Length: 522
Image 1 (cartoon, rainbow, N blue to C red):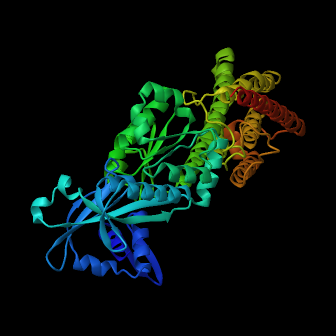
Image 2: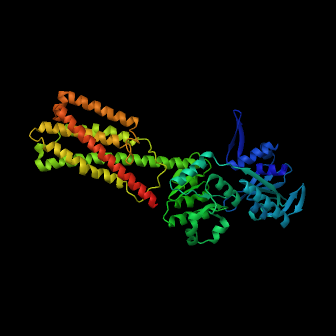
């Protein structure tokens, strides 16, 4: 046991240190766990590293699945330690240290060790094999093909890496929103399945493939079954690339996570490459589209939620400004074309006020709206879908069909008094645009389900206060070319505003119906 614990501290790049009464790991979490168990076993890893300094190393890689280091002892002799996947380490061993005695490694030993390895893996333990070797021929023997042959097997060491609660919850959310999470790991197949089942990725009936099995399958064959495979174990970086290609050939949007240098091709080929910020290499980060600063799967789901939230708000902002500005252009430009510039329905100062004040603050408030209640329940949108989706076009069409006729009616029914007509047009613009802003907290849900948020209410309240000031200051009224509205003017304009409000609620109802139909089709 002592030699095994010594081996896992020497064949190790991590560090364990204490600060303010707490212990911290610097480096790979798996190697950090090995230092912890060694310390608990009474092994001083710092002293070991000083007494047996490392003079050579054959680093770990996803293809090799093992790491070997060479050390010089106090007696000026050389010793090598290896750790890695148990079946790989065993394949390089010719002997076993059993009860302190060196014996030849037999088939019976190998079968017994592999059976224990499977039992540990079934309990969701990450298992490593450890071996060592004295180097008698000096530096001449320090070559990969020599060092890693004829090793002496020391034993197995298992550690549990329980999934975080937020990862389990994040997996549930992924499935709700139509995202299929798949586990790709270098761990043993049984360990991978046990962890995947606990997280919720694997269920009975799913396919599990190892790297060895994946190599025997052609890209065409994998493409046919890839949607049924939820766990890949003992895979290499090139296997990851093969998996990404299979999904993309099916027309799916693929996100891939990785941390090693060899993961870069798969990350580059994926639609969204996600690198680990803590354990990831610089090459991986450069090849990726996104870097996780906390290496937490749940953060990816939070990023999806934030992305949907931002996209929704962009649509609200865009639809609001488009609808308002199209109405202004059609009303003002149309009247000028019909009647001539002397019948301009709004003077430049009034047009400027509507664009800067009435449009401005409410649009900004819509851009910071809270997420909608179904932001993480609805299926992914079609990546080919334009931002001018069905709901956006429906609201713009509503402006042409419902609002613009009201403006023309108000203007032409009182054309003999141009100042009065301009007053009604100006106030209708203000009321309509504030009504739209109030209702655009959501493009789908009724205002009664998604009421306006604080910033939107403040923006609308401020605009109402400003318009009251405008109407009570004669010099501003003169600049705008408007009069003090009568009570009947206000009733008529507010009635039109109510009709527009109701028409928007009807459009939202139709949008929700269309969404429910699409969901059933999926």
